[in-house]
Image (tube, rainbow, N blue to C red; front, side):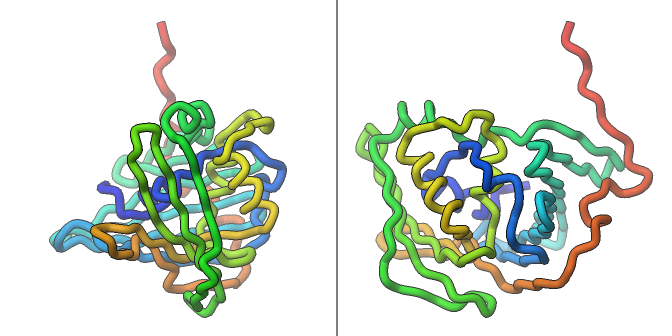
Length: 234
C-alpha cells in the first residue's frame, strides 16, 4: 500500500525514536480517525488509531479506483512488540517494534533540527491544538519545513511508537531532546502540514476523536488466524 502521507508526516519533522519511560503507556483511551491529505489521483486514505493503556491498534485503509486495501498493526508499547495482521492469508506476524530512525543516522545525515511554537492555534475534531513549525537541515544543505498542530494528551502516537522501538535510553541528540520534550509535555499530533512550492499542504488531519472505553478484544488476533514463523537461519 502506498504511503498515505501519514508516515511521511512523521519524517517531515525529522523526529527519530528513543526509549523513554513515558513510552510504555498512552494517557488517552479511545478511537481517533485520521484522513490523509493529497495522495495519488483517484486515491483516498485514512488511518484509525485505537488506544488503551500500553496497547495500540492502527488500521490503515486506502482505496484506489474502486479497489480497497487495508493493513493492521497491533502495538504493545510495554513489551515493545508489534503484531502485523495479514487478512488475505488469515495470518499474523509478531516482531519487535522497529527503530524507525536512529540517533546515529540523524547525527550523520542532519546538521540541525528545530520545532518551535508559531503562536497560532486551531480546533481540530473538537480539540484545541497549538501549531509548531518544524525545520530540519541536512549536512548537504537540504532543508525541510513542516508544521504540526499538537494537542495535550490526544493524537497520533508517533512519539510513543518510535520511542518503544529504541532499546537505549541515553540518546543525546537534537532528535532525542525533542522526543523528551514532547513526551514530557504529553503532546501529540492531530494535524500536520508539509511545505511544497512555498505553500503548506495538509498531509494528516484528525476527523473524529471518540473517548469511549475500548474493549480488550480490539487488540486481539482474530480467531482463525495462524502465526507466521520466520524460517530459521542456516
